[in-house]
Image 1 (tube, rainbow, N blue to C red):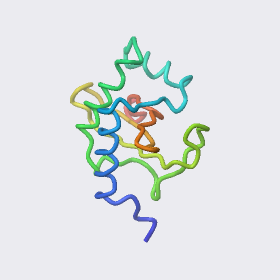
Image 2: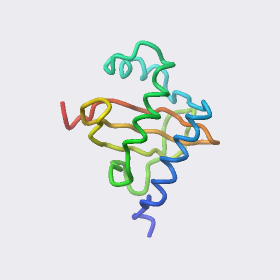
Image 3: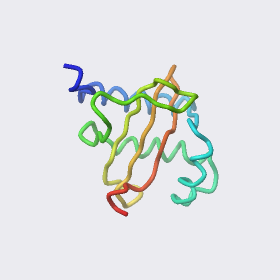
Image 4: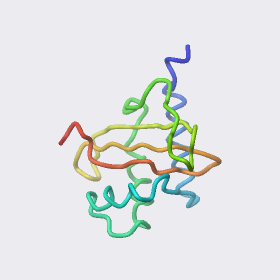
Length: 122
């Protein structure tokens, strides 16, 4: 039973909750040191730009794009320890490449864990 988690319904709710958190400007970097390299690769000059981009990218994602473990793995990042991680891999129309995103949700806050070009494309 638990190995089927997350269901498409659960994933749809997580994507919607992530959007809701970002619209409310509740976004935090789980590991700020990791973000610098990823933002550089995406040619994003300011961390303030990332939240609107992620919001747009979340509109492209569907439950079928889930690329995480079943059941979702827990985070080892101190700020979100034991929070479940949700990873997605999809062909982004906005960025014109296959992308990978991983996030956690905790107390109505979106925690950025990772956003980069899919390693399948490298």
